[in-house]
Length: 101
Image (cartoon, rainbow, N blue to C red; front, side, top):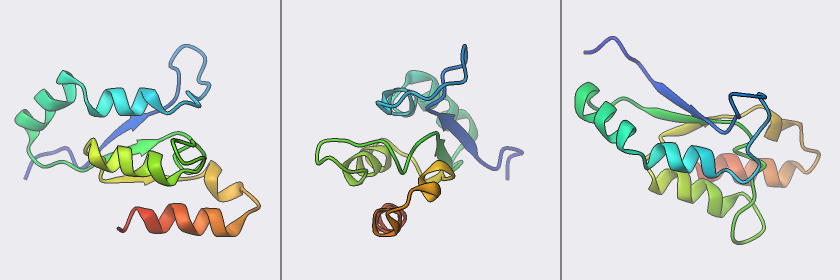
């Protein structure tokens, strides 16, 4: 086994540490040639996404479509923090459950 246990891609802007609320940054990183090269060199390392994953809305007006796009692009899971602070517990539960589908 290699020395890399997981890789995290982020929706944070490096210059300001603000979030990319569109979620496109993480999707772009997941689809990048750099990540393809990383996977070729390091094997099957889980890739996690960080930064508003449970909050970013996509096509359907909720996070379900965005989470599916992340999974389709090769994300294994997410680091969720801000999404847990939302008051609507049903939305949080739905976001978390969608990772297991």
